[in-house]
Length: 305
Image 1: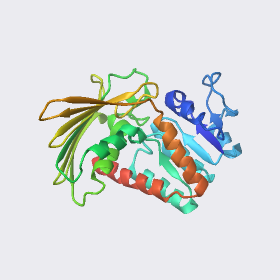
Image 2: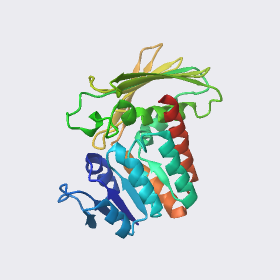
Image 3: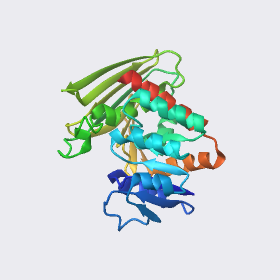
Image 4: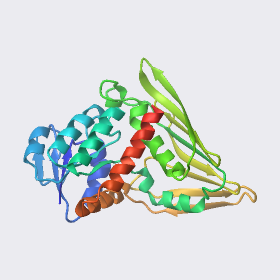
């Protein structure tokens, strides 16, 4: 199977490429506008995105471009009858996301967003340890330091800002923890300066579950999940961006005895697990589950805007 990458991005080099080369039967092609590719094992390199979509025989296109380009190139790829995977956020508006989802449905193609933090094995462990039928409190924080001045995420015109960059995490959290809840309410608070989003908070609550999350740019680094039930407190770091080169630790504290237990998880590339699922769905022409989940998270992200 061939996959065509549009954009020689940092995340492609750091996490996506290392995941793809684990597949023996995957042929990687790349469309890039002149960035260094000498350390990448690429079967074919295109210098023009349109040319790549026209000439490549790849069934799947991975769009790893700046946020403001996602919709345009996603639509072009779908119109070339390619399955698409897009870096978060899938688009900058619910209207455009809906257009892509409807186009994929019309053409019987897969569309996926590569938000993958919840594919880490710690999430299965956490969900097995807690009882969502009892009262639980969930707190998450994802704060990052000031970005380089030239980083596209500092530009409104390029689709930057905290909400565009991190709202998909919030939508996935709500879907993970409230997907079996019939009735829950969502509140949000945005922090903006001259229409640029530098942070937002969310509160989602049902009768039994309380989720509070904080997302910020230009702050001290903080990337943590804390869950409490009546007996235990669970804490995990690097939750939204699990590193591929180090193990993670889930800390469990007994709230009565104060005893602490550490649960270790070996390092893993969550993009590999994500691609494994996507490639299988493409092979079986079974796209409904992935497409429907994306619709759910996009509706939630729209509600948070």
